Amino acid sequence: MSILGNLLTPEDCAKCQFCCSFRRCSLWETPVFSRDEIDKLQSKYAGVKFKQVKDGAYMIDVDDRYKTDDSEEEVFCAFNKGRGCIMDEDKKFECSAWPFRVMRKDGELVIAYCKDCRVFAKKSLEEIQSVLDNGLDEKLADYAKKFPPYIRDYRENYRVMKTLGKE
Ligand code: SF4
Ligand code: SF4
Image (spheres, rainbow, N blue to C red):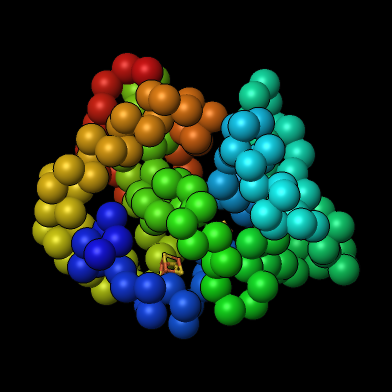
């Protein structure tokens, strides 16, 4: 079972793929990698490019995949060949935990989920909260502590479920 329990199935995501394709304005949502992770991945996934976004943190570089200037144009993540993510056991925790994220809001860290996830939109807040309370909250907080580049600034299309306190 996925770390999101019964909230999402692999079949749900294979049908949807919404969060594995990006307009330019949503590239901040692409997963962040450490240098060590990239060194391991590059031999296995030839052709995937990365770019440094801050010290020790890299994002997938899909800039040259856009074919127009249309801000609504979407391109798949380089790990999605059109039928879902090909990373399998290499998939980042960040991707496995999405639509949950650890975010910075008003000087504190919070756990929030993206309201744009089409399957989460049909779930009750109680169902979502119970998966968090079953240990996912600790996993998210631990991961954010271990790899701070994962933490993103809060955006309005996220719903805060838990406050973790000061960073
Ligand atoms: S938006 Fe939600 S349902 Fe769609 S692929 Fe992403 S996590 Fe899965
Ligand atoms: S790495 Fe995989 S799960 Fe993550 S955004 Fe890319 S295709 Fe989607």
